[in-house]
Image (cartoon, rainbow, N blue to C red; front, top):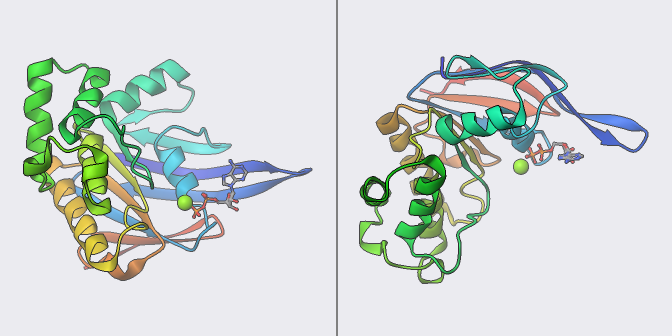
Length: 227
Ligand code: ADP
Ligand code: MG
């Protein structure tokens, strides 16, 4: 099992009280499979991804990434784990305006510690995998919203992550482009043998995913097989 969340509870300060964003959530995602987490706005989806990404430490519960229990790990250790094992695609593509598509990926390579030549080859291979090999020299303003999201996804794969976490990748796209981005993430999950969690409030694109889990008020209904 590449990603395992067990009995996760997460609260945020809320005036004099605490708001329970995640309530004893358990989720297991095997290598090479994609679990979609669906639920309305405010149900806890982004919180779940942030915990899985080890960006937020939960009040209770354990996060195991590729066999490593992250409980009690320090900031430095967690950053190292993320660098090598986790790919994160946030809702808004945060591309650097002055860099070309291939350079956006190469920046990641430096963080991950790839040699420049290896980095260029890997960046081009990933741009090809997301269908943008012929757009490698374009800057963000010369790309469409869907193309920018593809660069964002390719960038998250530069470290060949064991765990890929994707937050609402289709929210800024029209229906057709949204469907093709979900399809792309599904294909990349298989190709990279990643354990992928894809969060969305929109079920319409989820035709080819392995499992769908529903979250309501911080509670997760265990994933049902989607196919
Ligand atoms: P979703 O991604 O499904 O829209 P979130 O995980 O962002 O849901 O939020 C879940 C709940 O936690 C919401 O009620 C939200 O207002 C609250 N919340 C999210 N982040 C914070 C925060 N940093 N501080 C306090 N409350 C938060
Ligand atoms: Mg969210």
